[in-house]
Length: 416
Image (cartoon, rainbow, N blue to C red; front, top):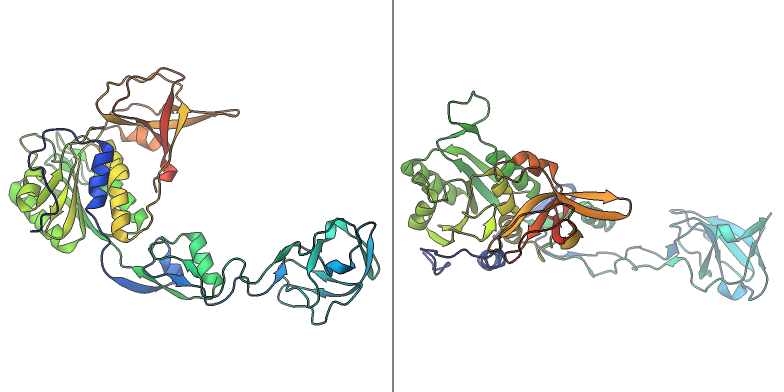
């Protein structure tokens, strides 16, 4: 097996958030393979080739406003210029004549600029009297024109390879008359939960059991990314069953994601199996929640061993896993989940040493925007995650927060 990961069968120190993120991104690469799909099927997919403009957009010089197409030379520096209206140009139905001296053509937004005209005067500033229009002074030559190729020139790169297609990208491709695009193949992700106490939904709980929420959380996050999913269910705390699951998953998928079993308890087998079957780059992070998270490889599959606590699953997925998957999908450049500072309207107790991600809720009071913690912050309290709209990020070296202190905020809408 290639030596892709170094230095950590026995990790004795907690790895910082930035170092862990960089280590992951340095060790994943885009998967091979592409397919050609219809434009509508490209939503959420990543372009494998540049989209080249086969025509100018717009295709012809056209009007940006409703008004009158005129010759700038006919306009007066002082006083209104009377012009004879000789026709009308509509979008899709151009004026077929030529605008001569002292003439104007009524024109609609998007209509082709008539031959001879070089300026559009918006209708709101003009005065109309029968077949004449009076144009006031102060007009700029060439105003309110959209030139052919102004948005995209023939032969230019409309969308670069590595672009993830959203609604605007689909519309842009359609505006070029292109029916199909070449996209990266879907990233194949296998995922399962581990633990004897984990029960699948749809049956009553036995004593000591809890329902499996993590697989549904991961299903939602992975589906939104557009991955091809292999849901392997719940695997008990049995070394043989776990080894079979790991081997099957690594043969079928590009990425394997587990939840639970990466701590140091007697029944936490995931980390040791990862190390025996493949390689482990790290398994302890200076983060809360989410300290026991493993990253490595089994065969050709990248492996993420996430914690078992529901909130820790989401925190570690958003902070580490998601960008790695986007890179493997071929997205370039990676989107940036911006952090910005806001005043915090509550006290927060914290000891330096770990980066903490608290669930937060933005509060708007008039023109003032602030943030407060959203409910109980235990790593098993998924309800507060559903009630939150941001993370309050407290770096490793920071201490407690007093009301009014400014804190870093990472809005959830920037994470997807």
